[in-house]
Amino acid sequence: MKLTFYGAAKTVTGSCHHLECGNVRVLVDCGLRQGADEEENGFFPFHPGNIDAVILTHAHIDHSGRLPLLVKLGFKGPIYATGATCKLADIMLRDSAHIQESDAEWKNRKGKRSGKADALPLYTMADAEKTLEQLVPCSYGETVRVSEEITLRFTDAGHMLGSAFGELCATEDGETKKLVFSGDIGNLNQPIIRDPSLVTEADFVVMESTYGNRRHEKQGNYKASLAQIVEDTFTAGGNLIIPAFAVGRTQELLYYFREIKEEGLVKRFPDFPVYVDSPLAREATMIFAGDQTGYLDEDALQLVQSNVGLFAFPNLYLCRTTEESKRLNEDTTSKVIISASGMCDAGRIRHHLKHNLWRKESTILFVGFQARGGLGRLLLDGVDAVKLFGEEIAVNARIQEMYGLSAHADQAGLLEWIGGFSPPPRHVFVVHGDSDVAPFFAGLLKERGLSAHAPDYKEAYDLIADTVLVPGTPPVKRRRELRESPAYRRLVAAGEQLMEVISRNRGGANRDLGRFADQIRALIDKWDR
Image (cartoon, one colour):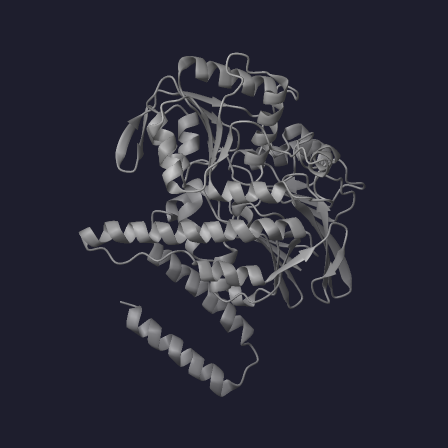
């Protein structure tokens, strides 16, 4: 029984964990790598056709965004997720495919002038639609038989609508191990969704550590702080630009803005306009506003069922078209603009930054995690200028951050969650944290008497022997590898897949194996120069 880490190992994005139990191979999450890791998205270090099933903890793109690529490259099995996650994945994966196709089209228009070869999208809308057909909706608490060897149960993670902890029981050679995959652990007392549930039993835990080295602001300050930022920005005559994840964070902000307006917290500008400029956020908001019984908290359900509405307030506008988006920057009236993507790596937010970063009267407010290497992190780190659409833009706007507005548990919340296991797990794998944060949080767990470590990329762990089977690749080495060409990395991945095919053919007919060996030898002779 083997667990291998193919993503979010000493990085924050790209969650992908591979469980091998007997002859069954299961992935838990298959997310896009973002920020500094983005270049690695085009290949897998395993053969997608060998995967029997995928367990999806929630719909965020850093957990789900490479599923269409997995399907494109041969995965044909079921994708288990909660019902709400399936609904959100429907819009998020289509949106991601649209971005992939649009980016490739833009690169090709630009590349033709310089004679470059055509760029291909990571995956297409057709790949996304095929992926959606493989989704299998599940309920919280339902026991699902993934195979003869593995059962699954989802428990509410309190991170976003439909997010879940994956509880897996795996049996090999008569020995059963329980594994809990945290996905992302939710923050306490968030609006709209319920608090994370406690899981109390596990042999092994794979847990996130996004905020493993810090604590959020004290609860109760969010609305007052947000209202004050609006007041200050509008007084200066600028715009408040909020990069926000289209699913989850945007809806949380709208919930707070509704309360701010109802309570009259922005004294000088009570009728301030709020624009949501993201087609994906608009669709997600419609899903959140429905009767999501079993996923929403009691206060949110009462608002939905009483027809008051979670997000309805005066001067709220949900932009539909590109023309509407462009008009926001042509209009000089102060306004709040919530736009995606939350890490500023794509989407309409980059246009709003281009038109506002140079304005000292405007404010850019970050309300979510910013991965290293991304534009959002660069702005938070205090750069003087950034390049957007080929133009250098001075950074004169106020750059602010609200840690408290986070869908992730902070250090205290993470420690409370792992402390709920009784008896303690045999071992905790700390993932989904920066290269300095994940080991730091693993050290905190060790200080509390837990067996824990932060695995490296491609590290394989023997769950029966409870030991590292194959050492992984440290993050420093991986960053050097990113300088190698994408074609070379594809070649390395193909070589690793070839070794898997060779391994599966052990015991085959001698004549077939000999022919296979001759074909490989012919390739070696051709390229060994």
